[in-house]
Image 1: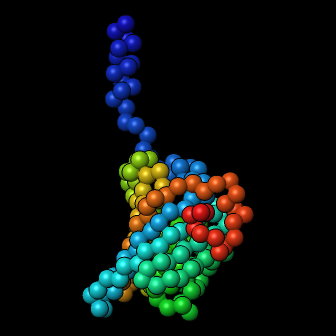
Image 2: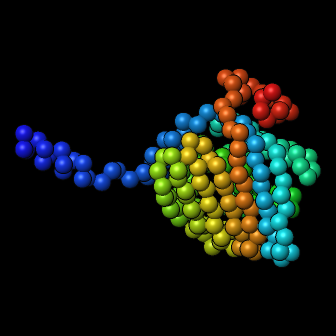
Image 3: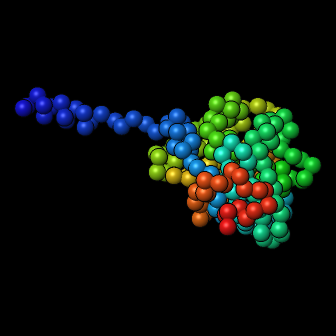
Length: 201
């Protein structure tokens, strides 16, 4: 009995296995197609001012993210895994201006993260993970000098779903995105057309 008690005491004193990137990948890989709302704040360092916009998003696994701005202007953007694959080479759609480029970078990161593409992310970024399955944070710093000239760092935090995403540009501009009202889409979500409401309503 004394030996059993000692064994139980020893087991209880062992540290719990740390929550790692494989655990996070498995958790996020279980994320179904989802829809919800977002609020993004873009801080412009040169002007020392912030611009806030809101809208809805729709994530279809392995397919795309639909980003629909509602205020202050209406605009609909669609990002695919093919767009994400070109992030290092093109810096993210500069033809549409810095705001669209950084929004695209955020959406591309969202795709890579939710699609469980950590191998791709680890090739591009030094990654630091903290927290546990219920409250985690990931910090990513670009490995390549060409990317660091545009992007300082990326920050993500969440639990069951991704809750916040931050993008810090080399020119000190900051894009912060928070997600809310997230919920799984129906089984027919992948068949939805691009013009449907992001919430599937």
